[in-house]
Image 1: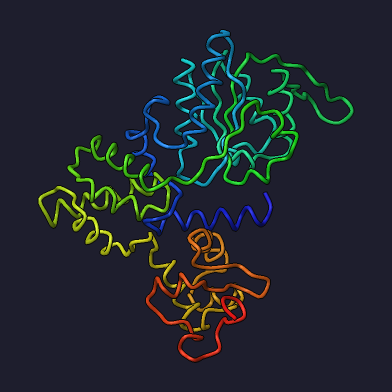
Image 2: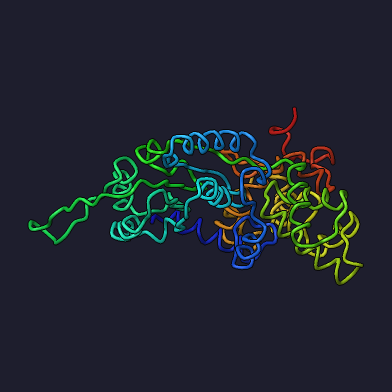
Length: 360
């Protein structure tokens, strides 16, 4: 594992542990998600193209009486990669084995898992890009030939013993598809990229989850939660649970737009889904540095966070929302950032701010 992986993992851990709008899942999220997950493609909301393509792949495999092609799912955390892997197993009527790249640090770890698979079983390998190189090279042969060579002994006397594997389907999931080596990517028969959800799709997710959680919610309340969920079903479900708690304590238990807005104000999630960290970054950039450009390290010091936390946790969403831009000269606030915080850019106030970047 390289240094970039280590710092990214630390940032993601902070994302899960401290942020209501973090896309990573902690123990509570995983337990609740298990109850809320759809069981088949018909129940799965969103990702229309991926669902249509995957449905064809699975139906064709069932018609042939064969195992499904290996599947690679890429995309940000919380979009449904694990859920789709379980649906693939359910649609194929096969058991599923779940593991992750960081758990496979030696070729022997992978060999032990592969040798215990049943015919047709689905192996879900999360964060596949973080698997060790020796295990990765073993996986090439396992995916293509359903065979692995187990090395017995060391040095000149080492012997490779071929081990035949039953046909299986590997479902790999990654948040960083670019880190996968081409030989591994090429061995997947079906590759799909998971997109962020539209607000209307998230409203359907919120309504479905509310029904499963036995929570009364009106369309306006669902829309309010969906609009603050950053395009991610996992965040929508987490916000729904927090709003449910507020509604039970402060109201009659039903969720309306006003209740949802008041609840999320308590948790410091604004109407665009920005939380305390996001707003701290924007406020420092606008108020202390006149909108930039400013270096990442300087911005992190101003916010009181680690450089990696600002870069890996806060910035991706701010960039995606068009509130912040990364330039060769440093981080720069966009006009939308000034408008969102209700501030006047220095140029309009008679100062010398970012005219060269956003105006004549």
